[in-house]
Amino acid sequence: MRFKTLAALNRAEPLYLPLGGLPREILMTRYAMKRAFAINELVRSIHGESFEWYGYTIAEKRKPELIVDLGLPENDLNRMDYTALDPLGIAAYQESLEGEKVINGWIHSHGSLDHRSFSATDEANSITMLDYVFSFLKVPVAKREILIKDLTFLVEGGYGEADLVEGSVSIIADSPVKRARILETVHGGFCYCVVIGDDGWHTQEIVTKERGVLSGQSEVTKRGASLVLLDTGQILTADVMEALGREIREKIKPVSYDSPRLEKA
Ligand SMILES: [Zn+2]
Image (cartoon, rainbow, N blue to C red; front, side, top):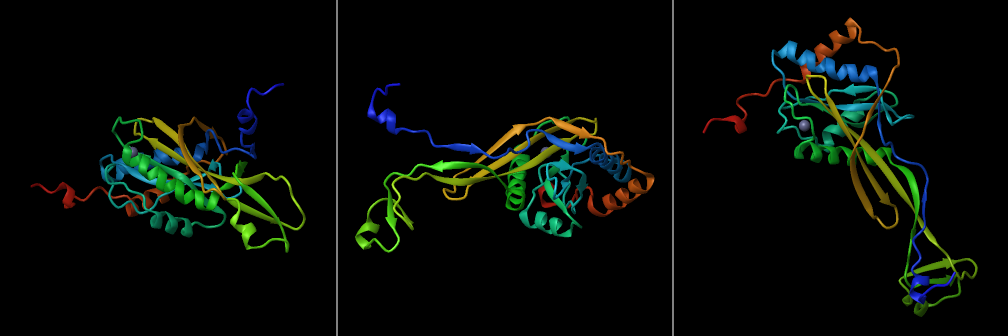
């Protein structure tokens, strides 16, 4: 093989070694999904009307890609245009979880609206959620080469100040080195985002973030994902429904009409 120019020879592609991927579809137990639609029904029967609510999707720490339950935080104002997730609220809910449970995303309902996609507010919430989940569920997903121009090699005990002025990055080794490649770990994390409606529809996407530990280079991606339901045999018993009803009375309340946003001018 012949290279046309010397420049072509020098322009090596940085090495990228994948170490394992992030989920490409959303895994959820059928039980957790039934709970989501049960919340919609209970909101209607308890409050006599349908409105938006949100919750967290919960997984076991040892299997963070599978949603096994939903967690309902205190929903302050149940209107789609108000719902704003804040990192402190998410952290407080995570703290309250027992055992080895972790938040791996969020779910919300558009109630009776036929708006089957994520709004701009929803997208902003998904990013807030992703940042939080990434902070404690990130895993190494690749080793990525960092191409450094003017990498200089020094030997321990054998260099002076003038040698340090040279090059953009210096590597000090215990014996002479002529060539080296520097690979950084790329951490990846994901957040599941699910939206449902009273009519039984659901739409979902996965947002992911990858960040290099050395370069700090980070990338956020978002893509639609299919939902895969797993049967666990768990069922919504009357007791479970009753407990859920109590939780909804306590945490999900219709929007208060003295809210400044809704005052008549
Ligand atoms: Zn929404």
